[in-house]
Amino acid sequence: MSSYMALPKGMKEETFAKAIQEFRTILGEAKVRTDQASLQPYMRNTIAENGEPHKPSAVISPTTPKEIQGVVGIANKYKTPLWTSYGMENEGYGSAVPATSGQIILDLKNMKKIIEVDQELGYCLVEPGVTYDELQQYLKKNKINLWLDAPAPATGVSVVGNILERGGGYTPYSEDFLFSCGMEVILADGKLLRTGMGGIPNSTSWQVFKWGFGPYVDGLFSQGNNGIVTKMGTWLMGPPPPGGYMPFCIRFPRLEMIAEIIKPLMFLRQAQIVPNATALVNAGWEAATVVANSGKDKGRFIRNGGGPIPTSKLISTYGVGAWNLYGAVYGSPEQVALNWKYVFGTFKAAFGDKIQIITEKEAKGDPVFEYRKQLMMGGVTPQSPLDRWRAGGGSMKFTPVAAATATECYQQAKTASDIVNKHGFDYLSEFSFFWYDARHVVDLRFDRSQPEEMKRAYKCYDELLTVFAKRGWAVNRTNTAFMDKVADGYGPAMRRLQRTIKTALDPNNILAPGKSGINLA
Ligand SMILES: Cc1cc2nc3c(=O)[nH]c(=O)nc-3n(C[C@H](O)[C@H](O)[C@H](O)COP(=O)(O)OP(=O)(O)OC[C@H]3O[C@@H](n4cnc5c(N)ncnc54)[C@H](O)[C@@H]3O)c2cc1C
Image (cartoon, rainbow, N blue to C red; front, side, top):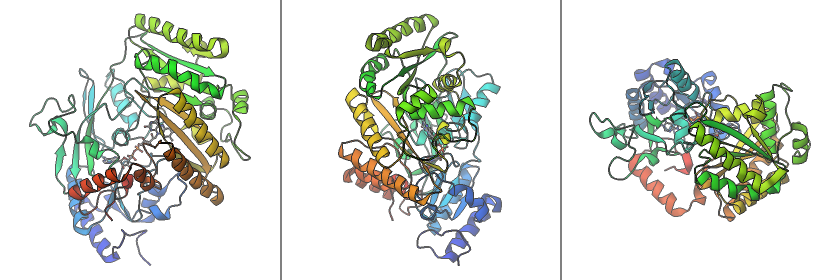
């Protein structure tokens, strides 16, 4: 029996032991662990697959780019794969577990330097172990008045990890990869690359101008396995003056209304009257937010058994809408007053008294409104509200991109809810409206302690992918169990190109094989 929890594919135990010895020579034993207790946290997962196909063989926790260069050199020598992660927060997308068994987790949690925050221009340069809450605390402590653009939840989430996954927040910046600027990357051959203006000696514009000269390469390191990012710049929004931020919520009583919401919403969004990533939250997701934020029913779950909960029941029990729209207006107080009139008038004209419009005045400190208010000004919120939906800790995010049109959002919502209900699950969703697209996030919640439910959840997710693909819809992110299937959907030409790039940059296939379906094995 092997003394390791797993071994890289096709590798003999003696060879792996030699590699581990060399890693320890440069990093010390504390930073190179192979024992079960050290590896266990990295196996914590929420997807509908048990640990076997994703068992790590070791965890290495470097603290400097130089140490990573040393690790990469040894990994090339022995061909040991390295799965980069910040920690265990990538919930719903596979957490920290590698795509294939036997990979070494390269945990960057100890790389915690906030290298620079430029208050005048509004940007920062950070290492990959810096979390949103740490960056927010740093800004507060140093009295720097800049907003983050944080995902929900963001406590314990790596700023760099979330941007590399092309995640999004809820402020007017929202499309986080778009607002990143300049990276430092260790390539698979151990060389250090600075992207954009970063290669210019003494550059003063690394964090202010993204494009550099020649082909733009930063995308190669997002959702990919072509390098290990050791520093990243990101822009931070200058907040509006006092009185220049007004969040609002509109509750819509019927599911079918989604078809009528999008047109006025996208008009306001594209005219920049409502400039942020507005969230259209369904009754289930909103009910979970109510429970999580009200402090009621502590320790209990919304759904304990039986079939999916009907929307009408959620509305009457939790006082939520069938759809709940959260947006905000920003600017000078005068602009905000004028723009709010416009927003109010637009929705009133379209829906009359059928809807409930809530501003801070009506919300009177309601914690659910406060939660969304925080998100739309870049506030860092803790744990997922959906954790209170169902016991057993299962979660897989199904995230199809929709064109932000009434027809498409309606059809996607209907198709997804029909499929998840058919498999006995609840349709818990949020559409975030970005520039032209609506990012439709369906959180499939299930009980991981029940093998039958695990199987059903796997089948359900698989069917969602298949049926959506037939309609020309695809997800923009997925978990480690489905990366191959999703990558196949994007066609053979893209598959070929990605393989060509991987072969050129990482011929030994040492960086996160299997990430986004890219693997030379
Ligand atoms: C209810 C709920 C709501 C959510 N809402 C949102 C939301 O609004 N917006 C959103 O974006 N997300 C959302 N998420 C997802 C969540 O925030 C993710 O966990 C987060 O985006 C990933 O951050 P992380 O620190 O776990 O990343 P990591 O685990 O560090 O990184 C994720 C992946 O990025 C790659 N990577 C990370 N660091 C590096 C590096 N230095 N070099 C190379 N590759 C690297 C690796 O492949 C890694 O597996 C939600 C999750 C839940 C449960």
